[in-house]
Image 1 (cartoon, helix red, strand yellow):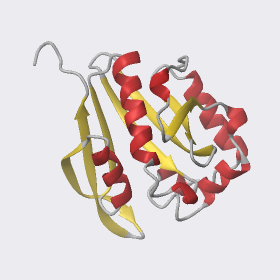
Image 2 (cartoon, one colour):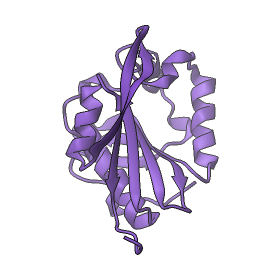
Image 3 (spheres, rainbow, N blue to C red):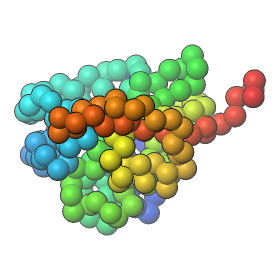
Image 4 (cartoon, helix red, strand yellow):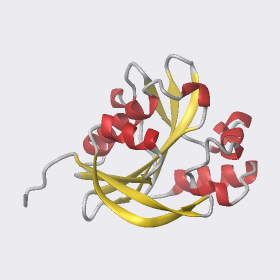
Length: 184
C-alpha cells in the first residue's frame, strides 16, 4: 500500500517515510542481528540477511493491508527504526501497530511515542480507521510505556503467551479508539 507523505507524517521528534528495499542499510541489518534490539521481536527466530530484509520490505510495500514506515529521528538526522501499521481491516476499521527502534542511541528520546502518534494520525485521517491495537511482552517495559505515552491503554493480558529465554512470558494487549463509530 502506498500513500503520499503529508504533514501528519512529521513532528518535532520524528518524520516517517514509506520504507523501500533500497533503504535496507547495513545499520538496519545490524538492528535485526542485535540480541538487545531483537529480544522482543519474532524476527529473532530466523536469520535476517539483506535478501530476507529486502524481500520483507518489498512485500509490505506491495501489500494492500500493511504499511511499513521508516522512522527518521529529527535530532539524530537518520533512520533509527521502523513502525508497521497492519494488518489493516477496512471492514471493521481496525489496524495493528508494531514498532522497532533499532538504533540504540535513539532509545529514551521519545522517538517511539512520537512515531506511534504519527501512525495513529495517518490511520485516522488518511485511512479512516477507528481503532488501533498493539501487543508486547509483559517484560518489555519500554514498549508498553511508549504506547501508553501515545494514549494507548492495556486492555488485556494473555498469561504465558510467549516463551522468552525458555520461560513463559505474559502478553499485554493494548488498544486505542481513534474515532467513534456511528453505532457507538
